[in-house]
Image 1 (cartoon, helix red, strand yellow):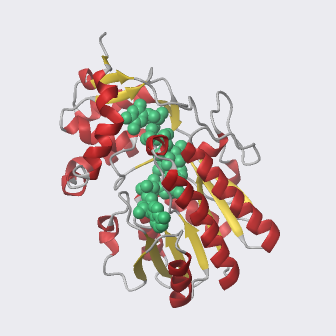
Image 2 (cartoon, rainbow, N blue to C red):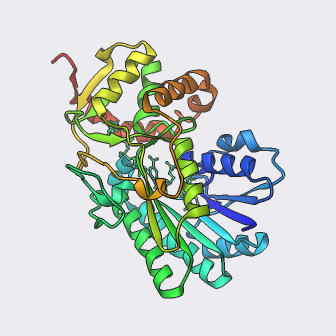
Length: 344
Ligand code: NAD
Ligand code: DAU
């Protein structure tokens, strides 16, 4: 392994992985390939901007010519694919880009990997492929039951990866991460959205009864989990990366408000997300057996994350303009108008 192509490396988790790999393995060349959609942000790579072992290419994973050119120019021998449309609510409003990137884009990367010849292909996937897990914990051999267009697009991408492993013998590894939080997360996802809204004293729209359960994983633990699967995973296998910190949404919201010193009157119960999965929960013994372990406890990780958002307004204030405000209006204006206060 000499040159790793990290697709989606300007996004939230991809950039944490790039920062980790560039600093931990100076002997490797890391090429970030990213379309810079609304979620891609070169500010996420500022901490490594002068690193001699890092290069950035702006490109679309569904553009075969551009992908081929990049594989050849950099003699790519390893791919780690983080690139995706990643937000469930956007997939409900507009599924199109999800099919293009999360399905066709994965196919294009695999096809170029097959033609060019590479060492290993890591596909970064999600616990959402298992669907709603009302009890117990998903293991890697469980069936796929995706419920949103996003989850279905990620499950489809994984199936393409599996087929290229079985049919063409490509060395593949899949990771399935749980709900991830931390610095540099686009403020549309629960924790950075609620944190930045609360800091401005604005309402926090909790979907439905707020009793849904998510399993929270710190971004650095997620990035190190992907690196561990890349370095130690068995070809053709999938690995769950879990936070093992199952929390009810309303509990997370209340904790966030108390850490920020804000009042619970900011909570608004709004109409639920259609097809909303009640609970995600995974068993991650398989990756632990390879030696990966988490470093963050959820409450400490959340505190550190909220401090980061408080201290880095320069990063998120400029995002919350333009396209973001248009998305906010489509997603929340009607919901908030129909919302109820926590006291009612
Ligand atoms: P993100 O939305 O923050 O970043 C996605 C990145 O991909 C952005 O930089 C974007 O510009 C880039 N991108 C999008 N379409 C592209 C295309 N066609 N070509 C090239 N680049 C493109 O996402 P994230 O939260 O960092 O998630 C990264 C990966 O991890 C995704 O595959 C996601 O499904 C998976 N995942 C996310 C979570 C989570 O909680 N955020 C949990 C488990 C798995
Ligand atoms: O589980 C892994 C997945 O986690 C990743 O694959 C996805 O890329 C990532 O977006 C995330 O999906 P979720 O839908 O679980 O995350 P989100 O932050 O959108 O929502 C977390 C929970 O909070 C979910 O139950 C919906 C709820 N929610 C979210 C928002 C944005 C609200 O109640 N109100 C909100 O405004």
